[in-house]
Amino acid sequence: MARASQTSTADLKREFDSLKADFSALTKELRAFAQSQEQTLSARASNTAHAAAESMRDAAGSVRDSGAQHLETIRQFAETAGAGAEDLVRERPAATVAGAAAIGFLVGALAAARR
Image (tube, rainbow, N blue to C red; front, top):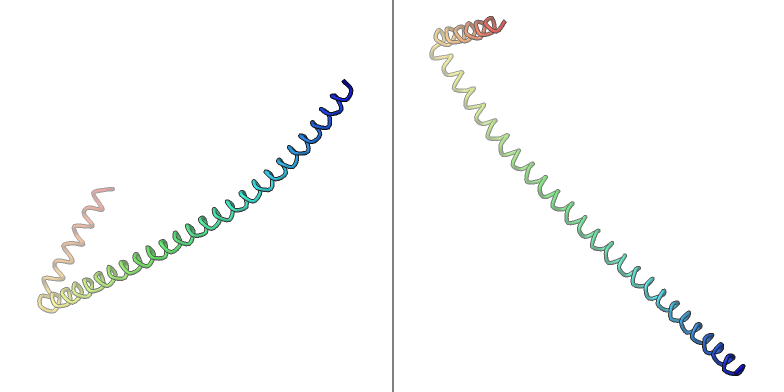
């Protein structure tokens, strides 16, 4: 009977050592897997950040170009309106002064009515 007890203790020790080795190997595999996942996710995050930055640069360039086009359109309109106003003042100076006075009177009357 003492012999069976010694055998089972030796068996248990071997089993325990085997489990310890298995846990050690599993720990190493999990560590390697985690490092691999970290590298993969880091690369994905970096690629996504670069793509987002490129997209923002493209959008900013598009807005800048659109703004420049609108600014040019407004500048041309202002030049045309200014030229038209100059022509009107040259052709009808009295009517222009009378119109300006009428607008001034109207603005003054509206401002006085609000008080």
